[in-house]
Length: 450
Image 1 (cartoon, rainbow, N blue to C red):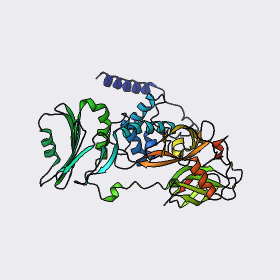
Image 2: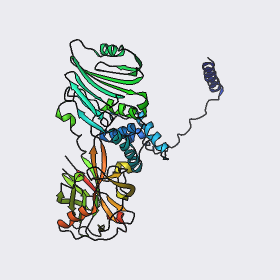
Image 3: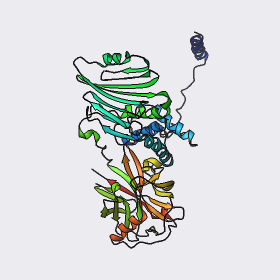
């Protein structure tokens, strides 16, 4: 009331002042109008996220979930929850809370997510009984049994159980099914969501935590139930989030497992290996291109490839002042600098050559894994060790993550000796020794697809 009275009083005072003011003797000359340029609106973290592909957003959400920063749906949608999770990660890692990951931060996040994912043995499987696709922490639940009604995975001690069941009958509704699940003995509900075609319940059952997700299609329902001891909550929380997002009760045939289509324009890095225009890079980064452009030099031809080791040799013609990278012969060390050119989206449209620290470790199959993985654009980057010796070529490969699609990437390295052998086999004379300025030997590659 007081604010309304104050506003009324101000209007009355203004009216009175206008009434008492003398009438102007002559109309004032209009002042020239000065046009003030409008500054473009600053791009928000949400704007930046929306400019990414859904696959890239899925990958970030998945990694944030595995590291405990994000507890929302892994679906590629932009949300405040996702942006706040990025800020929390940045804060805990001593960075500026921008809500947008730079290439170094993206690599750190990917490396941090890989450890818990590998620790539980995360994998996407197809249940042979129901046909449903789901994510399973294989190392935690190595025991599996199946019957006509579904499948069950559990730990040796029974502390963790995963059940996938199916029912088929007329008149099923998500509300009735959710109510029936809620009334199971000794269940105490703390969350529920019921929609026309699915329902979610969570809470406690006999001192175990439970999570249930049911999906309906026609007269059939498929229900995923996860039970785990409260003592395993720290390990299981990100697993449950990942399983919920990965659960595809009624996959649409074989195409459901296919990776999403590649972008029409993709960026990679290439290593100059001769003064007359020979460039070596990651074969997958330039596979299926209608055209390959080397920034600042024009089009390039793919003249050779090694599908076993995923190497490609390109050539540009008429180029001058190229600086080949010495592909040294000394034994490389495991502490590395990855020298490449990040995707322009990750550097505000720029084309700067940058260096990211990483380490190489040998996996079970002998493959050299780079950690942390660099961001997109670093496929084909040079790995240089602490002595300045070329250690190998960086490759980015897709891996299965939580969510509806294989969205994340892992970084591996093709060792220097294989790169040297490939280049020499294709008639390129290479320099040996140390790489005094690896950045001068890196070029951006632009692949254009249909």
